[in-house]
Length: 121
Image (cartoon, rainbow, N blue to C red):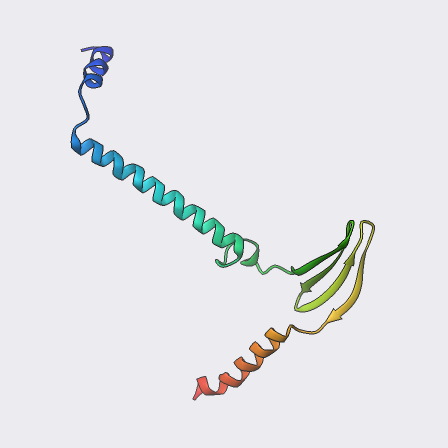
């Protein structure tokens, strides 16, 4: 039997119920996989999962940025544990001030130091 005759014969027959169920399950499985890929990409982009730049131990991290006008801004960056306030213009970058550690970070480190002896006991 030729391919043309075989395709005409199968086109005239409706799909059996098992084939329809398998097709629906296949489409559903593909939709679930695509949804998981989208969710994982979103989590990586937000830095929740340790992949991408955050996993490689990023040396410079921008904490905050405040625009001051046309093409001028103040930026707080962390470089190897130091927090710096930088002034940015189109032609230069200036160090405004070196900031101390963040209050939250100080509180967290104090709490971890306080809990450390209890964990060893």
